[in-house]
Amino acid sequence: MLPVNFPSAFCALVWYSLSTSVGCKGLEKYRIKGGVRLSGAVDISGAKNAVVAILPAVILSDEPCRIENIPHISDVSTSLKILEKLGAKVEHIDPHTVEIDPRTVDKIEVDHDLAKSMRASYYFIGALLGKTGSARVPMPGGCWFGERPIDLHLKGFHALGAESVQLEDGIIEMHAEQLLGNSVYLDTVSVGATVNIMLASVRVRGMTVIENAAKEPHIVDLANFLNTMGADIRGAGTDVIKIRGVQQLYGATYSIIPDQIEAGTYMAMAAATGGDVLVRNVIPKHLESITTKLDEMGARIEEMDDAIRVRCEGPLHCCNIKTMPHPGFPTDMQPQIAVLLSIADGTSTITEGVWENRFRYTEELQKMGAQVEVDGNRATFNGIEKLTAATVKAVDLRAGAAMVIAGLVADGVTEIEDIRYIERGYEDIIEKLSRLGAKVERVSD
Ligand code: EPZ
Image 1 (tube, rainbow, N blue to C red):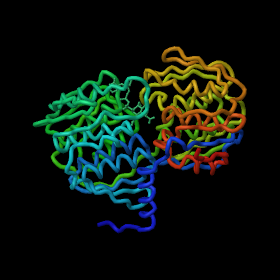
Image 2 (cartoon, helix red, strand yellow):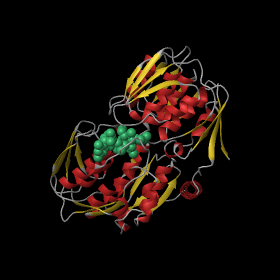
Image 3 (spheres, protein in one colour):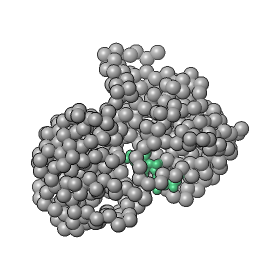
Image 4 (spheres, rainbow, N blue to C red):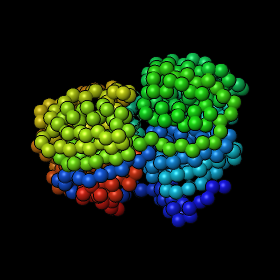
């Protein structure tokens, strides 16, 4: 067994048990005193949307895997707990590294409460189906943006030969006597369906072709991890992914890519506060659409190999944004950039091109004085001089990040409730912001 560095493994275990058992109750909140220009450097953590796909993928291996650069977020601790309840052995090597042995997985049903606490729990369907031919997984929870169907996931599983049994209280049960490679066209570009079909098909005899596939960085990261284990996946990052099934997958050591959206969020914070921030441990290519828009709004962006410096002296300029699947402007940066448009010169618009209802957070921004009107999938912002502090809610993960940005720029002390959403996706956000000079604290009612 691998040598375990006890002290760091111990503190990782403490974090892990706390974040799964105690977590942050609904009564905890952030308190932010606005008006500070952020300055200094921030290190970006591993990508949430990559790690929540890669952890279930370990089930497909015939040997233990070591995953590095995992972020300290509750979606990770939940995924690890699901793996343990399925029978896998999880060992914390250090605060950002786990070793998972899937050889002892002996169940096909995912814990109901854990599945409901995040969106990506449904990736265990593809992984369990691909490894065992069966899966029983409750409909996932996660952020609400209106209807979040899974018809394209099921279309992919059925194309491979699986039968689905929709049981009472929303449990999805899939069985397959034999899975065979097939072609699947995704009517809508879907990250989740692309991930799930990849997971279900990687050990399936024959060729599976996913057409109109999602191209996000986390799709490529999953494909790279699976190929490191011995899979044969080509085309990830394009809209046609070809997966030639293999009979065996081997143990691997793999490091998660930096989080594109966490990086974009800190870039937006730097621009919003008129600061000067070096955002380190990034892949600039993943941030091109965000960099382009911040530049258009008047920020000064300097790209290095694995870092981006964001400065902003003058006022922000208005602009129009349309969110699209990658490489378009990411929908997961939509609420954050909306805060900048709320205080930019002139009138700006955001057109939401992915989700049917991702503007709920604007009601919270209006409590802080933002002049914003929502009409269907378009929001129009008339920029104002300053936001005013208020008590607001994090209505979902990225909306919560937007409230943090609003608190950083508002006059006075803003309190943000329901911070559990934020801590699903942002590692050590209070510590990282404090190191940038922000006046933020986490308090309990
Ligand atoms: C992933 O969600 C991300 N979550 C979301 O990030 C992100 O907003 C989204 O991709 C788009 O980039 C994770 O990766 C864990 P989709 P997912 O399937 O997979 C429709 C965050 O903040 N659709 O790409 O659920 C769907 O309604 C989270 O980190 C179907 O019609 O999104 C939507 O309109 C929030 N049928 C569009 O496709 C399906 O079967 C894109 O959804 C599946 C999706």
